[in-house]
Image 1: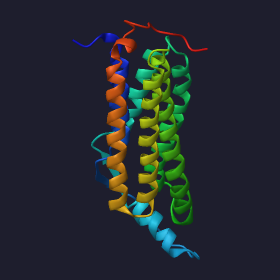
Image 2: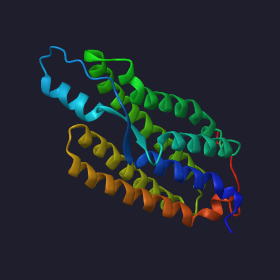
Image 3: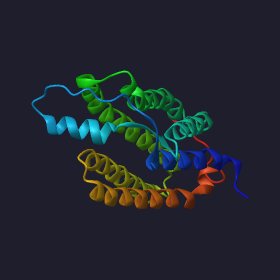
Length: 217
C-alpha cells in the first residue's frame, strides 16, 4: 500500500505527464483570420495556420488539470519545503498565459493575432518548462543526503536532459518539423520516466522514513 506521504509526489508526476503530453481535438472554430499586408507572408502563414490554427482545441489530457494537480502537490509539500509555496504564483501565471494562448484568437485578428500568437507560444512554453524544472529540482532537494548525493545529482541530469529535449521538440514543432519534433518528444518522455523511476527508488526518503521532512532555508 502506498504511503500517504507519497501522494503529493504521485500527483506531481501525473501533473507533469498531463502537461507534457497533448492529444487534441477541435471543438470550436476561431473567427476567420483577416489577412494583412506583410513583408514576411511565410512566417505569418506558419504562425496563423500552424501554431495558432483555426480551431480551439480540447486536450484529452487537459493541461488545466495538470496545472491544478501541480498546484495541489505544491500546497501539500509546502509545509516541508516552503520553496514549493513559492511555485504557486508562477503556476498561476503560466496557467494564465496558457489560457490566453488558447482564447486569444476569439478577440484578436489580423496582425494582432499573428503577433500575440507568436509571443504567447514561446512565453507559455518557457514558463511551463521553468515551473516543471523547479518543481522537480525541489523534489530532488528534499531527497539530497550525504549518502545519495551522487545518485541524486545523476537524477537531476536525467531531468535536465528531459526538459531540454522537450524545449527542442517545442521549437521544432513551431517550425512545422513534426516528425523530428516527435523524436525529441519521445526522448523527453524516456528521460522523464527514468527520472521519476529513480525518484521512486528513493520513496522511503520521500515518505520521511529515513531522512524525515526538511525545511528549506
